[in-house]
Amino acid sequence: MKLRRRRVPRQSADWFGKCLVDDDPEGAWYECRVVDVSILGAGIEVFGFTGRVTVGQRLVLEVQTPEGDSVTVHLVGEVKNVGSAPRGRLRIGVEFTELSDGERSIVGVIQRMRMAW
Image 1 (cartoon, rainbow, N blue to C red):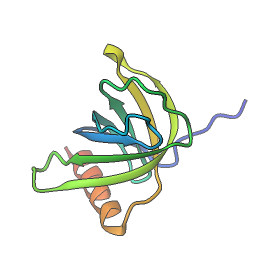
Image 2: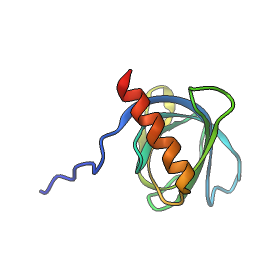
Image 3: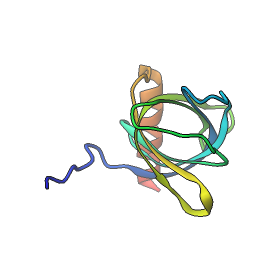
Image 4: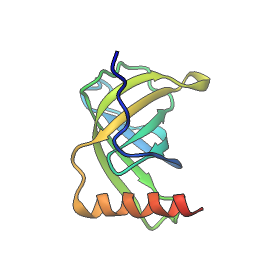
């Protein structure tokens, strides 16, 4: 079996925000935490989501960066994997698909800052 390696290393994060899973019948935003991030994607834990998430669905994520409340980042991606996380949370791996140049730059800068810490 061939192993798939991540194309870009991820850095740990601890960003809290909210996310919306497309095609969710509830159409609700759920609290979430970005666990790790790279310029290509993120690992997210979702709190209280009871619906079904499948690979290929679109996920919208809004987070405030740890650098202050003045920066809110809007990220859109495609669900690449789904699993369970501690305390009944849902763990979702997302590949970013619709980042603007500005959003990609912000994620890259924050990633580099976290590497320096």
